[in-house]
Length: 428
Ligand SMILES: Cc1ncc(COP(=O)(O)O)c(C=O)c1O
Image (cartoon, rainbow, N blue to C red):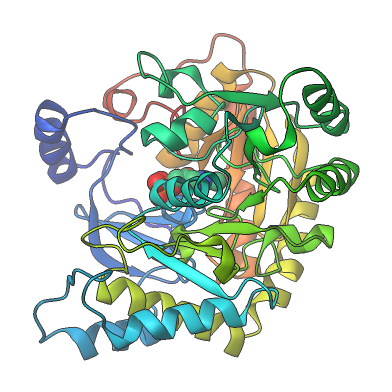
């Protein structure tokens, strides 16, 4: 249950956040509390003893919430060993193989190899690298308007959701397609006027856009793009870092569209970054792709393996679809919000303006509900997979009240809370 014992941020949190703000290179969007290791299910506790309901799931990377007993067992099993970080692309551990086997067991059959790496952005980097390596005439890559694929320089070139991510950084040569039914027509024009098919390294897209606005792709857009990329032999990459591992009610968001990409990426809920493709697409020269900690942190691999096992054992895909529908229906009845959307437990809604969105986020945190922003004026609703209907009811009540409070003309938040939460303008 939500239980707020202090003002937010509480005194212990405030002390740490103030120091962190001064010392942390690249101050971002830290929420106005410091998490303790306590918490249960969808609820987390801060170091001041405040309990929050978490509908942000550590930006979709915490699918089983806080202190899940079976995940705690995994930690216990590894608790007494060092090292836990191996140079995994050079020195093998069994978990590496098990993860690749599990991952390829939940993917279309021809995607039979996986490369593991530290983060989502690095997964994207390596996805585009293997495509380019297999296409030596590559001149450009293609991504979508409002896409988010990460912040390393290669991935950042594909990203198009917010210019604050990009200011001052050099880019790879990219062309962009609109994220709507006209995308295929634009691609045809590019092929007719700009470049030959073998000069396009890849087309990359999220089948539900994440940071850029939580928008599910139109069916026709995906079908048409897939047809053209197939016809022209252009590798099609599905970025599943936010939407994958069951959040949308299927293992991978592309499965809602009955297509199979040449490559897809995973991360976040998987606990480790991954590129999945057919064996033939990976470079066969040693060292072409690697990283010291690539192969995955052994604990991340073990937690990711348990995550996949729990999803299978507890029939989470069906559960996410069902409970997602419950949540979407409840959101549809909330006054003052619009464009309620999403698939499974990857949901969002819009407020009338960015300012109201920012204030609603703050107001919800102040009342014990953690949400994340997206796009220009959107809010994500991404609870952990173990969320109960009664937790959704609690969240909806808080959202309803917050929207009402913040919709009053000239409403403005003041005080310490505003110093720390910059309202979800730069999440991932
Ligand atoms: C679709 C997508 N791709 C790539 C990334 C980058 O992942 P990471 O933040 O782990 O580098 C994100 C992160 O939010 C994402 O949502």
